[in-house]
View 1 (cartoon, rainbow, N blue to C red):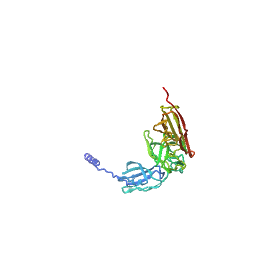
View 2 (view 1 turned 135 degrees about the horizontal axis):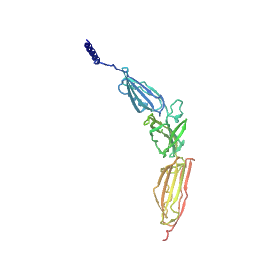
View 3 (view 1 turned 60 degrees about the vertical axis):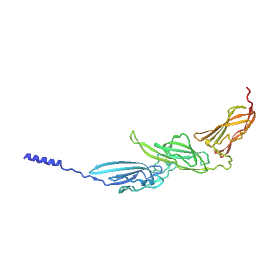
View 4 (view 1 turned 180 degrees about the horizontal axis):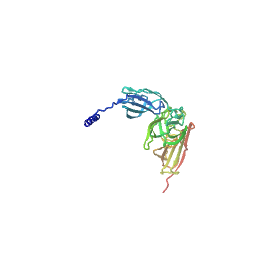
Length: 397
């Protein structure tokens, strides 16, 4: 009897062991939502668009409709899975960094994933101001912004105009790139080294990088100076000693314009020299002149606010050729452009070997260079006076 009971218990337990075991898993209905980190920004600030897909959804959203009003500069994706009370839960987070293409009321359109779609989101984009720190209270201030200024309201054609670009930086930057300044029919000449200093504005200390350009317009009329753009990665702390978080960032200066005046009607020269200062210098390799012995004469012109390519020849013509007692041999001109903290400076230097062939007196005419004083707005002249040289007979050996 006991043996029979034990056999029945063993069979019952075996039945439990081999009894089929199953758990029913229910998938969560799919949903899709879109959100942004802010709905009001300037045209040079980025916007973070997040798309959350909950449950099973086939495919990725078609984001091409975004490109009409926004530039997509980066994207990312993260996914998570979980099982709770027999239900499968899946989330996919898609993120996009967007820059608005223009100011105004923009709309992030409805985006589709299979049969699902997001709701449209309206975004208000303001134009960049000259000083972004002057925005209304509650407006998020940028971490980087650009300021462009001109040193004059109007200039003459081919006159130097100084554009100063200041980059105000409130965060560390990586991979920063500044767009090249190009203006039709304007010669753009950057100054050498950038300046860097600290400036306190509205209670915040900024690192300021200052870059300067000399602009030489080649025609009269209104000169439009386009905005300069900066793009880079803002570097922030991630809480990890070895890694830092980055986010794309960009800024632009304001568009500027200036009136370019034509050459004054009273100017009668074949060349045009609008400068803030001009100096003409003369030097000789010897003070005595003998038949058969060559003497070198050097002329040098230095003009502040001009380039060497704008300076006229000094020995050309001038009435000094054709003397029976002299022969002239000119050399190629030496040209040089230098700059200090204020202006570009053009230098032209010419050399001429003078060989006396007969004894006697010879008068070399004055050399005169006309130029336009841009500070005083009037014509001036630089003169090397006429020079009488006395040529003696060759020394008797």
